[in-house]
Image (cartoon, rainbow, N blue to C red; front, top):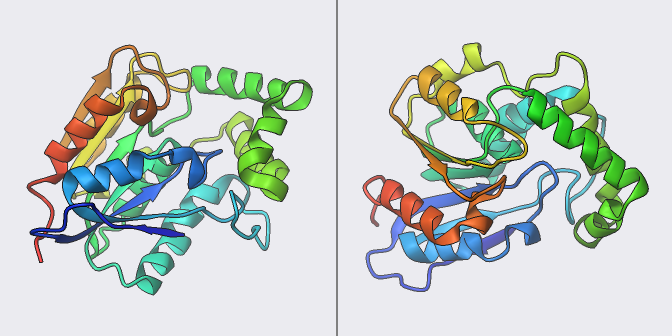
Length: 249
């Protein structure tokens, strides 16, 4: 876990940005985006490795296809309570965005807003096809070696937890009909126009089903990682969205 402090602290907001990484992500794979967003919004931040990723401990038992719901319903609430986070905005990439929406559906007291980057409300054929290709690259190419750099001994477990779930027949990342109407905090949903893991349909489902305000941004010339592929635009849009929501000390 890493705490981030903005470079400029005049009028320091007590709202904390909590970053939730993608399905094969970790602290390091965010690169410098969390710090840049904290600097731009003048808010503190928390970035951490979820169970089984990066330098974290492994799952005590296989969570199976419910791993995102378990993170949202059990792990994240305990983490925020332990860290005494009283006011936060969740910034989630891919699986992290889905976890953020699942958590928001509980209408938790600390949560002020949600920002998603390439989140999944449903599973799509394009996503399954890309994950099938990733499984082949992991088995016969250099993907496993590249992931080892970030996940070490967690590499095999993290990859198979993620990929086995997504390619399982009937798998859905969340109960969109049951959960999204419970999301009443403001939501900003961002997705790349060329996202190899999802289509524009994701934005429509999120915006159409949440129970509160939602704005969407479809980013041109951008794939599955808008914050890394179009960082200037994404930083500007998130900063604009968060600015009126943050609480000043």
